Image (cartoon, rainbow, N blue to C red):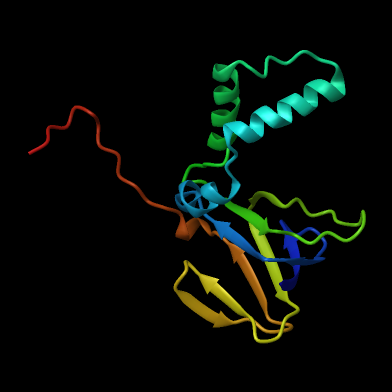
Length: 161
């Protein structure tokens, strides 16, 4: 279990325990982050059944096209443009104590500050680089304009050689 303090976009720090925290840019939003957070049609159908029962509103949960459309709309909302100066974060398996838990388990941020409350801990970057991240160590994650993704777009009319 990871134990740390987390501040999203300069909000007050909150002490959290979870299996970890993942952070990605728009480039990574189609990969690991997407697969951690995506929902299945089975999940959407089940949630809509519960919603229908609890609200007494008739929702056509047998409409496969509707279930697919809602599933795709949610899953596509997890993907964002690599040129945006944003990061997506996900708390993995958060352990929540009482009603004081204010941090969203998933969201978007311009700045993320993490302060370790662990011993013999590591901060892993892109699955390969590992840094000691023991009690009191702080990592501030943000994207500066200078680090923004630069791309070249070619018109569709360009001929392939």
